[in-house]
Image 1 (cartoon, rainbow, N blue to C red):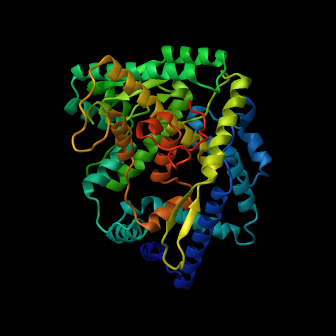
Image 2 (cartoon, rainbow, N blue to C red):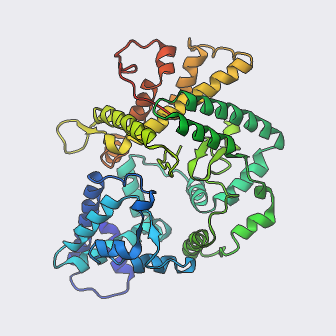
Image 3 (tube, rainbow, N blue to C red):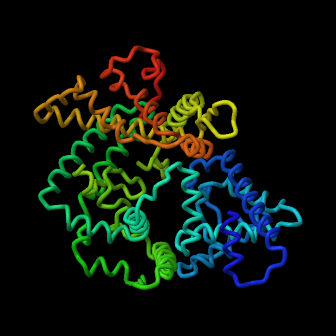
Length: 472
């Protein structure tokens, strides 16, 4: 932060008295604000059932309820004026607890509030674009990257460019992928995968223990009526249709930074358009080169991208169709996972300046639903695999492993979650709430009875706890 601040002062062409002292104030303000916000994140919780009608609130009311410290009405009407957003527009607040405490924090910053906020916003703007500026800024960013991740080598221009394309022009990249890699005959394979998943999902609903019969019937009906998206959308093969998506995006061959700013305008226009006319459901929430499938609840879609042939948003949104009995039973299951994860710790990590190894507890309340979704997804996939083997010839055993096909199924999932990072970065992720892959994977497997049976895990062993929480 100090390096970037010094470069900003140098390149501003302004004569600043006591610049060294002011840079230090800039760093202290920005870092202090980041620390306050990080502490809020660590000790606040997401809104429970934020999509419920009674939880929605107008921008005017939310601004008033938070003491008019931040004018949310002006902020969002300015961003979404093309969509007609106004003070009466009701919004879904995903992190109500965090926002209200953040407003209180801003209110109580003291007499230096304006300077602190100005320095913080200046830093956030600089941080957003530092990688797109001249070499000295890029180098400062790389040094921070090495210190944070412990990876001294640059991953390569191709990787950085791919990341940018993936984030900003996923449809265009998806079109290139399917044109180069996918043949229509492979769609049959996608159909086969999807059929087995839907059968397993339907059977899982029947066996579900926290849904009552009425909710199960509605859930099965939703699955059967879901829109199946397989392989890729047809417009990916139509250059004219694809071009229409990016019609408002201006790209310069000679000015990279201008392209970054134009992408911002393009995305803002896209957001306004989606609010104004609604989502275009011919678009996909996944890219064609993604290697996983997903049931996307809000649109009732089963999506199997083309990428899954070659090689889960566990959003809780009952939208009024779950019965009260099912909701109560679901909450009991959620509390079971909360208790389970509250007993888990990540690490311990070796951190510079600390004489002892530092363990980090898992925040069960924040992670419970995601943990349940992962475990349920593993179970569902295994059930689909069992149905496939029952209808087809049993696969040959994997040579040299000494493992059964059932065991190899779970091992292959675990391998997909392998990671390698140094303790500094692992500790940084952990204290910010990310649950490490070893905890997530082992916890998911330990709640899947089929895993315990496949490996004959003794009861009350770490991978076969006597008390297993219910799954979907």
